[in-house]
Amino acid sequence: MSRIAYVNGRYILHSDASVHIEDRGYQFADGVYEACQIQDGAIIDVRRHLDRLDRSLYELDMDSPMERGPLVAVLREVARRNRVRDGLLYLQVTRGVAPRDHAFPKDAVPSLVVTAKSINPAGAQGRFEKGVSVVTVADNRWDRVDIKTVGLLPNVLAKQKARAAGAYEAFFVDKDGFVTEGSSTNAWIVTKDGKLVTRPAEHGILRGITRTVVLDLAAAEGLAVEERPFTVEEAQTAKEVFITAASTILVPVVRIDDRTVANGEPGLTVARLRSRFQEFAERTPI
Ligand code: PMP
Image (cartoon, rainbow, N blue to C red; front, top):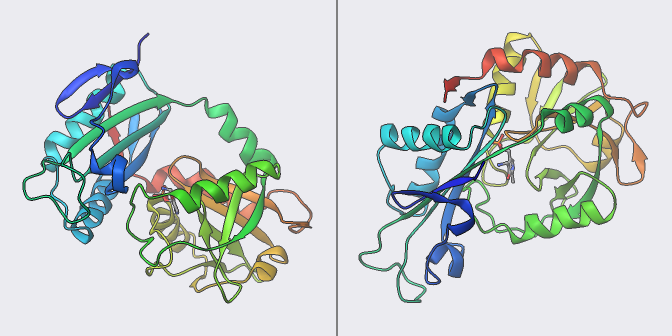
């Protein structure tokens, strides 16, 4: 079956899909995106993802490409046309096509691209059962990483450093030695006395949708939560460490740089949170 992409009003073959060379996303990373999980034939937390998209657009003074209702219809249609039951929807909005000039163009029309791909749930299950390794890198990003822009070069370099070291993820570390977040995930620890700790969602991290759902879930589970920064050493000596993202939900971290976390096995808290996650997520059938 051929893959189909949505590009500016048209559903076309993924292999033929393209945007103009003067699209500002291509030239300036002047664009924003969202990635939503599709699980068992439903889009997960689409409302929250589109709320965050609206915020990203607002922060960059960028027009929305379409109203919420038609946009959800496009997302569902792309998932349907690609027959994705379990996978990922990707949506990107840029400021549009205009002659290259740094300042905003006067009449550019925002570009919208939506793609969907299937992901074999077995890969995520393997990571969940075994846990993953993480390396640490200096956080050298700008101070508005709360906006989900396509300007991801530091994240790309961090992830590549992880892959080169045989690890799954890289934790960004700020100049004071505190973990900010992963290159494409939010970072969490469980302290020895069972508290869940994650960095506050100010400008230093992306306010992950999965993070928000896990906070709701933790409250329902009666788990104590502290939104505060934690150091690399605190993570390495914690009871459990895990990461969250729409693409993987919750994944246990069992190694950080050269130190094993706890006994090197995924912990019980992350297993419990993962088993209940779907109860707290919103499902939009495709
Ligand atoms: N931080 C960064 C830098 C990310 O790219 C992502 C994934 N989009 C996340 C955190 C997790 O966010 P979410 O739970 O919304 O996928």
